[in-house]
Length: 396
Image (cartoon, rainbow, N blue to C red):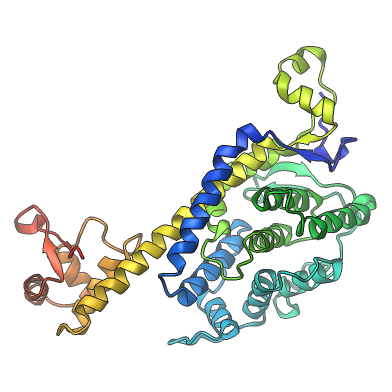
């Protein structure tokens, strides 16, 4: 079988999907988004939004193997959002550009997506001061005539996932995509989450720039999602979920890119007859599996956001109750770690030895602090004795 890509199909870019296979995930996403929206009305979300934007930027770059200075990016975001940054960090052209890009994608929701706007995004992504001296990168313009292969993995062991359309077809393809994106932003007949899934797939397939296509695709996806719910404040970071499930992302992308136009009769008969019939009848390309993967990953992003907001609400309620309680700085620090949960917290409670390490106090002081917190009702003892004794925050 000769390898062909989806953009080589005569049906490109007419997409279709089987509603019966995506409806369950679609309903779950909309339901959870509604719950998330309700939770945000009870939480102070300015700091949460900053943290989410930061996580999105860091994860999106990490997918491409680039590690950013988190504190510099945080300071740039805080400056742009007008958030008081207790420990300001020096910003860079790169961190400023990334903040500009993210906030333009999330706040200019009614502005049309144009080539000019994409070029500006690309320039923000690659400010002159951060460009490698040894690499001639076309910035703010479309890629050159060289074949564009999309790969992942180490340089000595890269895997080719697909090949993008040739340069000769790029202008026409990008113009068609931009027209569709702007037209569907006002199309109530297309579910906004499915629109975001198609936007992601279509743009990443075009791969219009020399570099940065993945990060621009994820920013564009954020724009599509923000247009869908008309909220510029992001409380979920899809790039984080994509990073955590990077292998399945590339697998889903690769599977959707393959277009087996030259299948022999034996191989063709093995294809699901219903799917093949729908393609033939409607002359459209079936993206059901890709849409399903996208929605499932979006669900993970939303659930992670709700977990974070629940912790924020719990933390707020806890300190409303104990804010006037006489506590020393070490006790407050440990209590905040207990309340934060997650990777940096103590899901299974905290022991005296762990208190000693976190608070940087002696063993005797740690034991005395814990006894004081227990007496004041800030923590409660879990089953166990001796060195295995652990404590958790009090139930409210």
